[in-house]
View 1 (cartoon, rainbow, N blue to C red):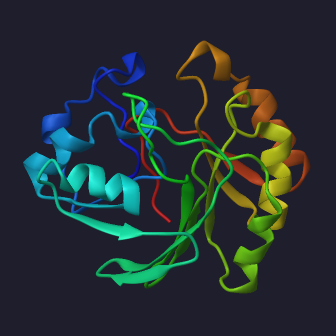
View 2: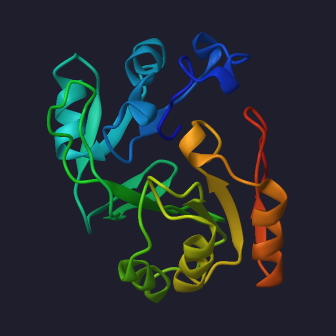
Length: 205
């Protein structure tokens, strides 16, 4: 599971977090709309929290299990190798305390490789990823205002050399509402596939 924000999300009101199962919870940064349900889910499932040192320490102080990482580092977990990579954003807990530096994750699985960008601006650091790994899916923010928008996400997909994109960080708040058809058309015009899933919907790679 990555960045669970469910219980206060009106668009996810049909999901009962008490029924969710997770062995690991990956957190890109400390903002409330990414960590809100971590404690509840981790307590009920004994999930291991994976994030930067500051975020993991915060949850370890609450008695939860965690694996701290930092930028450029990688670790072999049972589901694959995870590398913590750069993101350009901010990171603070809801109480204003320091949440470490934001990041993203490159997950090298047994059969598929995935890049989870986290909340980020377009950055040249993305060009480093395909030097080491060939991606099957890039999960990119597309909502603009707080992160990169559609046009920058298209460039980001060029940088990471992946034409199969799962969009996220859009529509949850008024600031990040997007035109779905226009977004898909812009990616299609660049010979790329943008997937926009309904909340609770899933895909299989």
